[in-house]
Image (cartoon, rainbow, N blue to C red; front, side):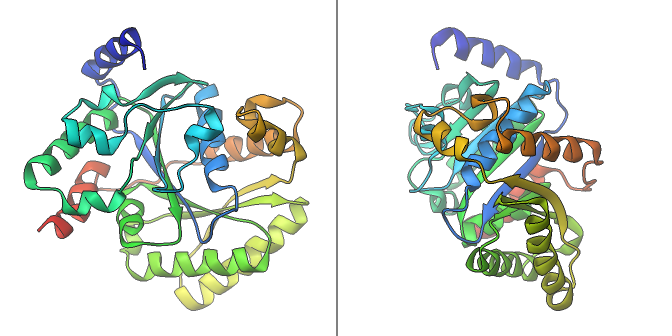
Length: 288
């Protein structure tokens, strides 16, 4: 971010016009299902509707939001804590209408911060939570202890799968761990089927997962929608242009338009505890 952008962002953060950003954790049971691509383009689609969106790339070691955007971020959450930077210093601002933060080298580091750094992390997180309309956390595949904490803290989560049997099985395994270790009153999980050949195929994949989640986990799974398989997505990735803006006529772009329309027409989950309080609660258990 250049100096003028950083200054403008700090001024906007001081205003803190948003009472509480809506937080969404995006995860998957396995890698290679297009999770990060969905998280990025979902964020851009929200931004196109005039929403202020911040995306955190917390897929540590495998993060590729910067690659999809053609960026080379100078700072990350890790460097913010190491150098005591302001969070506005590490935000890439104005990229296709969204803001972006790289996670750095170790998400598990947050569980091992000393009290001073931990308090500073919470303080900086509070700033962005009061500035943006949406905060999207792009988490790594699987369900590590660190991922579990962020998903539990978020207002809702989206699990991304394809129609492949192994992908469906891995998505179920990830959801099982989340549901078993969470307070069901505070989690909302939605399924996104990526790279579907048709609406029917996507619906079949959802029905399979919904039935086993209902039968064995006693949980009601929500269906957020599907993205059709589209060769233009591969071209967009090669050119480092998000597919949502790469081609207006692309099948993936049109599919995402339907997802966004359905998503924004639904009422947001009403949780009694705010995101920052949930983060503080989750991570304090590890810090203590």
